[in-house]
Length: 342
Image 1 (cartoon, one colour):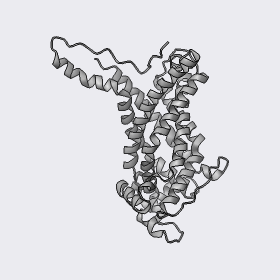
Image 2 (cartoon, helix red, strand yellow):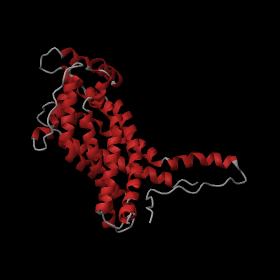
Image 3 (cartoon, helix red, strand yellow):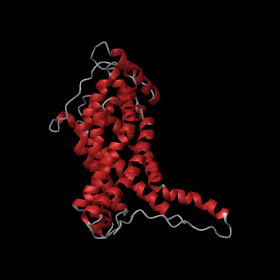
Image 4 (cartoon, helix red, strand yellow):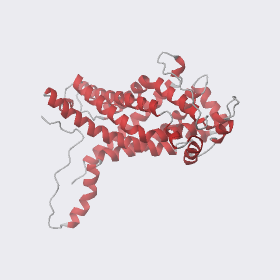
């Protein structure tokens, strides 16, 4: 049995009636929206959720890279020394990059999960997505494997695009702290050169000091984080949504199931990969403060070191908020597009 898409199939192409081209011209935008509903919903929802939660991301990065006593200490210090605008410094890069990355990620994920489902069906005789879309069903090894493999594929695929944008964002968030660091070295002018620069000037600065490949500093850690994290992210979202819907007798896209599953997948994925993200942030900060040709110190990924979890609470809270908003908006927009008349 072939899996049915729970986000709605496209209607058959309508035939031209008496009004001919007039009707067809009016139908084209609706058909285009239905064809690309995943991309439209992902990009719109990404802009909204990223902007609203960006201050928490900024605080998280600061707490990972520099020592603060607690969340409030970091917020007060940032506001006192840099002003309120500091919490949104560097927001342009993630608004552009996260929107692009999420749109591509969801597009790749959608295609990958149907591909893997078909492979599993050929191997076992049972299609994971057909099972998921059956009312009253529960997660199985095949469904979890399908979602995890598709998520890992999407996460790995988008790292090449995401890494330069995320490095630029991190530089903008830490620019003042790097410039005002108490350490003294020959690289001090490099540290100060990042202070109070916009997204594009920051990217130019990185290229000037470390070359074009400098935009990919920490790529190996970024790839590891996104491959593992995105696999856990989609496994948690799809499986918890299925469990919640089944327990309440609702469809998998019921608003309550979506908002809870969305928040939960953000919390679980960050809790699992946070030490990798901390190591990435520290390593990228070290790269930014060294000139081209100098080797930056790479921290070890330590899952049982308390220092690697600084800012975890902020990150989990932010991720819960971002993904609850994102998936609620994502599923709502897709439903509205699916209801458009052909």
